[in-house]
Structure formats: C-alpha cells, structure tokens
Amino acid sequence: MPSAATVLAFALASVVIVAIPGPSVLFTIGRALSAGRRAALLTVLGNAGGILTQIVAIAVGLGPLVASSAALYTGLKLVGAGYLVYLGVQSVRHRRDLAAALSSGLPAAPASHAVRAGYVVGVTNPKSLVFFMALLPQFVDRTGPVALQLLVLGAVFAVVALAGDGAVALAASRFREWFASSPRRMERVGGVGGLMMVGLGTGLLVTGRPD
Image (cartoon, rainbow, N blue to C red; front, side, top):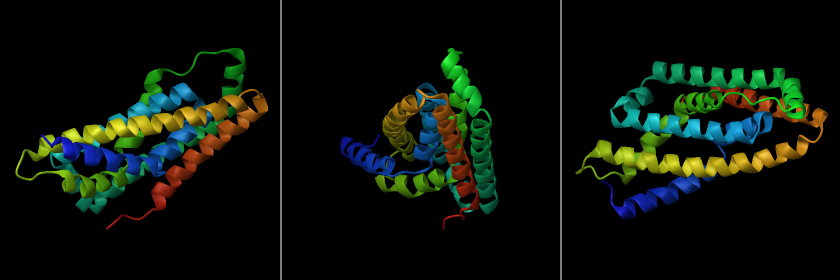
C-alpha cells in the first residue's frame, strides 16, 4: 500500500490535473447544456468508471502495450472520437425534442444511457491512458506491490475527478436551467452542447499520437 504521504501528494497533484480543462470537462459541460444536470452527473459517474478501468488495465500490463502500439492507440482514439461525435450529432438533432420534453414534463432518458456514455468516453480516451502511464510511476514504490499501489492511486484520482467534474456539471446545469425558461433558448443551448461534443470528438480524431 502507498504511504499516507504519497496518497496525499498524489491527491494534490490530481486536484491540479483535474482542474485543467480537458476532454472530460468539455464533455461534461456539453452533456450538462444539452441534457441537463441529472444526465451530466451520471455521465461524470460513468467517466470515473472508465478511468478506473484504464487504471486496472495499466495495473495488469495493458497500458504499456497500448502506449507503445500505434495501431492500438489509433483504434482506441477512433472509437472514442466517433462516439463523441455520435452523441453530439444526436444532441443537435433532438434539441427541439429536449425543449418539448422540458415544457411537457416528459420523463428523462434512462440513467443507464448517461452512465454508459460517460464510461465509453472515459475508457476510450487514449490521452488519459498515456498520461497515467507517465504520472503514476512517479508515486509508486517499486520495492512494494506495484499493481496494488496503482489501483489505490487510480481510485484516488477517480474520486478527485468525480468531485471536480461533478462540480462542473452542477455549475453548467445552472446555466442550462436559466436557458430552459425559453423553449427557443433551450433549443439553442441543446445545439451548443451537441456542437461542443462534436468539436471535442473531432479534435481527438485529428490530434497526433503523443511521444
């Protein structure tokens, strides 16, 4: 097990890292604007699950393979980018349905959909996988059980990300609630959220593989 000092140092580093706007933050804002607070928070939960899955993959040795294989990295990037674009296009297409649902009080989409969306985006983000490969070893005592330490530190990062992205989801959803007072504004904000996700997916698609 990592020492308390190590866990604290890693937690502080995680806070700084999570605070820097990245794919998860932009995706959370897009979901909050296009689908609301509940969907955004569930998306954050799913994204944290995706992060934990990546940590487990690193712990069992998959991380180095993906980081060193251009083919695997590209495949993972294509899946994640394509799913983001798909979600964004769906949000734009159904922006009028969203406004109508809010005004008529129709039930929200199943919780499993939002959790699944966040999970897929989190687990297929190749940049975070490579990032963890570079960051985590700095906090690991190689004389102890490395896999267990990776899992513990990964859980710490997931908790920090859950709190940070959750705060972003709540803040963004408050702006959405203000826009929801007008159906026309709600259509626009739904479209903006969808375009943000399309832009994020496109950006992930065109970025090169880090060294």
